[in-house]
Structure formats: C-alpha cells, structure tokens
Length: 552
Image 1 (cartoon, helix red, strand yellow):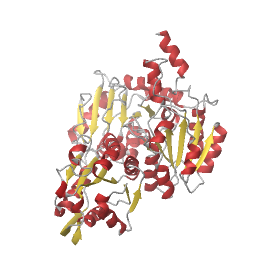
Image 2: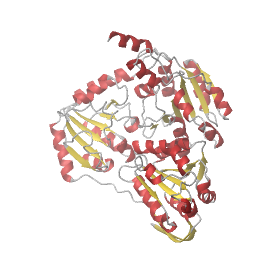
Image 3: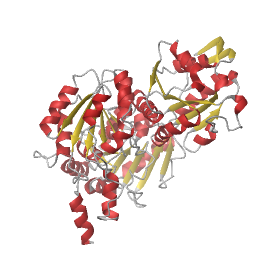
C-alpha cells in the first residue's frame, strides 16, 4: 500500500518512513547536525525519542529493541564523533543479524572535503561493519533511499544500515514523496531440496538440528518444535540462541556456546546427520570450527547465500527462509529409528544442566532464584563475561523471545539492551546480567532508564576484575597478573546517584528478597552481588587453574 506525501521537508519525510515501519522508539544522543529531524519527531505523537547518555548505549538500546520487537532499531547520532561512539552497536547488529537503521548528521555540504568540524567520510567509515551504507546528497531522494535502507536492513540476513545526511539537507523541501510498506521476501525450498532432505533422514541413524538466529528472525520457533516432535529429532541451540527451542523439552539437548560441557559436544559429534538451520556455524557454536567432521552429512539451510558453505562444505545447501523450509519439511515421510539415542543424549544434557539441591557457590544460587521467581515470559539480557556461564549452563528458557544476548561478545551490552527490550514490551519483566567490568562501560544509561521511567532490573556480579580475561591470563601466563584487577566500586550506591534503586547482597536469601522487591518497583533497580573472585568460571577456581597449569 502506497501513500503520497506532498510539500514536505526532508526531515518530515524521514519521520513518515519511520511511521510506515511501525517504529515506536528512536534512540539518540542529540547533535546540532540533525536538530531538524529531532524537531520533526517532536511533532509526531507515535514516536518517542529516547535521549541516551552515550551513543554506544543508544546503539545497544536500539539493538535490544530490535531483537525484542522484531522491528528495525533506529538510532541517531552526529558526525564523526557520534558515529564512532555508536560503531560498537553497528558491529553487534552485524554479528547478530539484527535489523538496524542509523541516521548520522554529516557536516554541511559546502564544507565537505575541507576537513570540516568533526568531518569523517561516514559511509566509507562504516562500510566494513555495516550491511549497507549511503550518503544522501539530494533531498528528493530521501524517501527512496531511506525506504531502501529499511528494506536492506530487514531482508535476507538482516543487519545494520548507515545513512549519512549533510546537516543542510534536513530543511530542504520535497515536492512529492511516495512511501510504502516494505515487503520482505521469504524464499521457500524447492521440491527437489525437500526430497533430498527426506532421503537423508530416511538413511539417518542419529540426526540432530543446530538451530540459530535465523529461526528466531523468521518467527519459526513453533514450527521447529513441531518438526522436531514429528520426527523425534533432537535440537541444540547455537551460541546465545537459547530460546529458539524450549529447554525443558525432551528433544532439547543443549546450548553450543562458551564452556559447553563435553557431553553436549559429544551429542553433536555422535550425530551422523546435522541440519544447520538458520545458523552461520560460527566460531563459538562450532567450538573453534572443530565440532563437525567430514564423516557427518551436513544439511545447511539459511536465507543468506554467503553463509552456505562458508565454514563447512554442505552435502545439501538450501537457500530459503527457515519458516518456509519447516512448513515444507513437515510434509515429508520419515520413520525415526533413533528415539533411544535421543533419550540417552537428553539424559546427558540433564545431568550437566540441572542445578544441585545444595548449591556449590553463590552464582548457582542466583540462577536458581531467578528460575523460581521470574515470570516465564521475562526477557533476560546479558553482557559478555564469565558470569554469563552460569546463566548459559543452568537457566531453563521455556518460552520464545525471552533471551537477548550479544553473539558479538560486546561488553556493556546487557543493561542498555534491557532498556530497549523493556520499551518494546512494557508489560514484561526485563532483567540484565552484567559483570562489574561490563556494567561500568555503560552504567550512565541507568540514568536514561530512570529518566524515562523504564523499570529494568540490573544484576551486577561484582568480583573486582575482568574475569574472562583473568581466566585466560591464569591459563597462559600463570601468576603474572597485570591489567585485569579492578578497583572497588559500590554499584548499589552508584545506582542511587542515578535515581535508581540500589541493593547490595552477599547471600542467596538477600538476593531473593531484593529480586522480589525489584519486581514490584516502578523505577530501575540494581542488585549488586558480591561474588567470590576465586570462582573464576562455572567449572574452575583460580587455584584450580593454577594447579592445572603447574601439572603440565
């Protein structure tokens, strides 16, 4: 459906495009180079401008909003300095296949090429990490190119698009602009593709599905469950795609991430057929590209042709949307002979993923409390860091669209992403998990959450160190600690300075009380957990690492 708009400005034309996309929140740090666009947003009641404290935080909010809502995240910034600050969010969106559109105010057209104030060739600067970049120099092309940007961001393998706009273009008049809905192509597999998969499964003895973000982006989680149930095929989740399949389902056999238990890896290694569904088979998912072997039959299904065969040569490659593929695969005829094997592998998963009754450390107790007290549809986000190992190992995600984590491994991501997710779903609980190192990188956005009355819950595991790097340091340079220790910070007190609640806890009981209190609050809450610095990972202490190194 098309709409013709006449006698408008470039800035207002952009707002019309945002409305057409159903965008409700736009994230930014204000800049003089795009003030007319902010003013146009002021006049549009369906759009809320969220002014953040740092462009990196704003871009993480937009990325989290996009993951939660399924709509492109939109973020605004000014010139080279603002663009450089938000580059981390663009990189995360590219790595995570998240649709995002970035509008960057550029220096005045008359000053371009003269090293104007804060001038950078923004389209060239972002080209290596964005899906597409463009600088728009003619106002009348804004409707065309902005809509193209949204189309590129949303179609195929989604990703970030960056638009550079000289500051003098925003107030220029456009005589006529046509805006329309963006149609997303959803290619289906051919009949020959479907027959080939059927023949492979008919010969299979131990098939498995590795399900990735393509399933989530296609909103195909329910179809995946029906497919797995119909043919009794076990499902493993790709790195940080936990909610792609119910973790409590008898056919779920684990998460392929960092520190994955050997028994879960062994399940994939035992498979004779691997169906890689909507996953690019990344370094982490494939355990440093060592997970699959040439003896296994690989069926790789993805909507992006560049992904197919990039890591492993597939026996069958299918260029198709995951939802359309699963609809076709539900019609094939296969008699499973592998149910006993699946049941055995599920038991192996349960043995390493169920928390003991007597918790071995505080981090295990925290996960148990979250599992017990959070509503099932809560949205959980996390930063990068070893603290996330306990979440990945033990928390059971039972509903779709409940987990948001950066496959890029970006520190500082968790809390701003929770703000974006909470804005997308105000009626759902949004909880972020962060280490003290990552949390400090975007802690200023706590004030943004308080200012806009976004009652997220931020859980900070404070061990006064960069824990992941310290673990690798102890392994490769034992007892030569440098650069990984951090100073003492009271995050509970810092939260109060940002007009949020702050609670410091040291025991499971204190945490549970704080969590129950936070669930009732109308403003953000930080729960600071004082954790044991020696407990460096799910499976090891620093002392154990040192002994292991000494024995080599």
